[in-house]
Image (cartoon, rainbow, N blue to C red; front, side, top):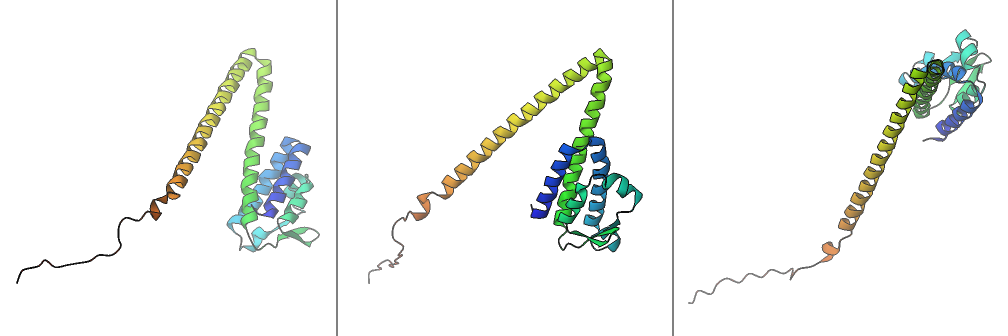
Length: 190
């Protein structure tokens, strides 16, 4: 991971701790789309710039001031006081942050959905019981996935260890007999 995408990710983590999830969801969906468009069309000028005065960007994206810091880290510079332009040379950091934002969006959406379900469940004890049971099933599933992953990792380490021992074998150094070959024709008496 390059330094710019690491710094951008750190900024995202800080905003998650600081702002309401609904605001972050609005912001990150738009920002992710802007970065994805740039990532997919890096040579088209219209995807390199965006106006800070755009109503949607101003009300949803710039509502989280740290986004400007993130954009600076990703090589966005001010063309003028109302316009930001990407002036980077390598699109990899943009692509990485776009992918990370997609993941954060899914996490936030999941948290919001769970919260709404729990609010509904509080009003209906039967639904609450069902949701609690679903949580237990999900927890067991995650534990089983973790157990299988650990087993696979252990097996992988064993295979790597066996392979290493096989390649470290001294069989390559063993020499059998002479390396000379001598041919003597049969004596035909005569």
